[in-house]
Length: 354
Image (tube, rainbow, N blue to C red; front, side):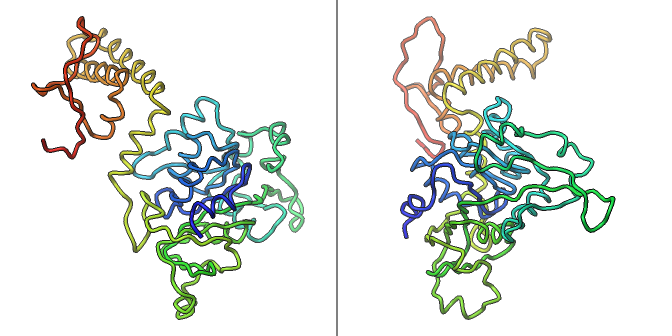
């Protein structure tokens, strides 16, 4: 099945969606990119430790609610930028659990449990502070009414435990190294929570680096991690986890993840213009307090230059490592000058040697 057809058939608006992998490890980027192309939306997302794949869904406004413990491209972006911006602007319905509890919730989902008793959040602010209120939860049919509740341990009188909800996953997106046509999967390296969400989900889409024969799978059953009965669609998608890493196939793409960190600072050009203008004003104000400070002077000049470049439409090129130069004298373009007419100029990529 093609990736287009798999997403079109199995990913629906309003799904409870779970993605496999861990921050920059085996993340299902190809599948998420296809969702972005097709337009499905209003997801309730569980990502375990999420990465750029969820950040893109949030940035494109496709997430109705997000239940998570940590979202980052580890080593590149400590907190994913579109996720952070949505939280700070109050635009994302979000619930926070500790990582250990969230992993256990996904495991409980694979077991079909009605709820999960834990002791891991007792005494912490995670019990006291709810990101999604009970009132808000009751307006969302696929969301449990309570984040958590302390109950009596029926096995040990007088002891309290914390009951947390168990997600009911509609669709799981998982990238693996090898899969057979019937959906049996080999995962090399850490499995993370992928097996749990594959078992728990009503529909599982697997993208893989290679499709191997059923005979190949049978040669060493100890390598099997996900059984075909759990999988609805198998898609051959080489580099389907890129720019994340896929153990034994490729490492994470350092340049691409750094590029995403830069690009995801801004929602769009208007946001870039606004943010850079504020940064420039802040830098100028700091310089006014200490006009002799050379570092502040350079910072103010750089901030003003960036703000002008954004307003002029050069931001995307600059963030991609390119530059704009005048012809024939090879100078930087100047803005907000008395003469508003631009000379001839050329836009060059960072790879251009001319």
